[in-house]
Image (cartoon, rainbow, N blue to C red):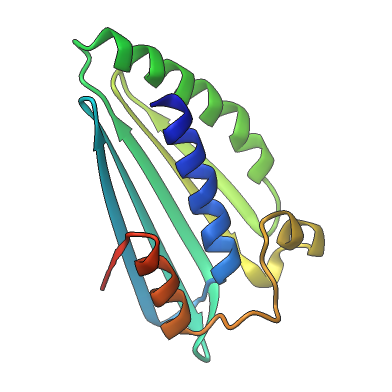
Length: 150
């Protein structure tokens, strides 16, 4: 479960970076819920667009486990450690990460402002200014990954 959560979180960040993001109307909100062995992970992408091109992304991943399940609590502790370590990788003008941890709920939010990301940051997240980052394409990409968009 630990690897699934970490890989899912990384994949989500990369997907958002690949698809771009925006800072004006319209806005797109896409959510996916996954349950596995008593743990629930919810991932939400909020994408803002400027001139129909994605310009800002807010990705939130929340993991909730049953505190009575010892295996899940072990995975939860690993997820928390990974979250705390990786949050330092998202501190720049174009990227920001914050996290909240409770006794059995952990949440990490990553905010990306594509216009303020360096070329190296864009490259490391697989984002390209040459991609089709329109509302329709971003929505289609997220839905193909299993997200429900509105």
